[in-house]
Amino acid sequence: MHIDPRFRILTRIESWILPKDFCESIFCIDLGRLASSGIKGLVIDLDNTLVAWSKRKPDPFLIDWFKKLRSKGFKCCIVSNNLSNRETEQFAIQLGASLVTSARKPFPRGFVQAMKAMGTGPSETAVIGDQLFTDVLGGNLAGTYTILVRPLGSREFPTTRLARLLEKLACRLFPKLRALTSQCDK
Ligand SMILES: [Mg+2]
Image (cartoon, rainbow, N blue to C red; front, side, top):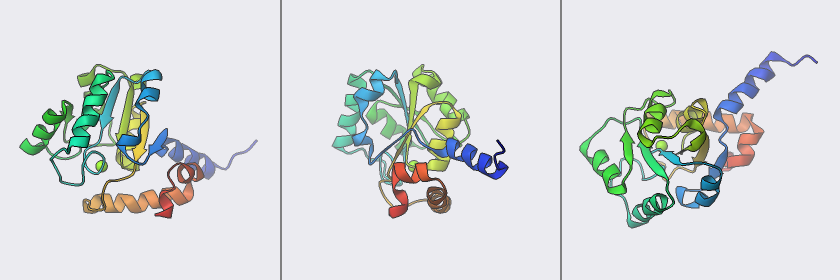
């Protein structure tokens, strides 16, 4: 059967950016289910996933959530495209997580570095983040389990605002993505 090449390309793109799961926030992630499916390490995005953009003070809920992660045996690594600075390093230390900065997501290097720091392989790692074209795309390319979360706030880098337009377009184009996230309704 002949398949239109344009359709094949679209299907390929969808498989790259489609997360395995979508949660309203990190606090809604079913940690028990992740653990029972063999996930041992969590690569977590920073801005608008753990804290609002440019905020670098973890609140008590976040500190408790990381304690819970550790008590369940998860290794954690925060992976950000931002440059390293003292506040970000302090933030990761407070949460007891490793840190990879200047990660250049969606390129694999930062994800590989994080998995090395956690001692996990791709099939034992989940990537959690609020952006399709950095966190989800990168996590999928690295062969990990990917979880998209809704961004915590609307304040973002100009480049991220541009990426949000592409996300909206992707939602219109790909029904599976639309069904999973319902982001186009926002
Ligand atoms: Mg983010």
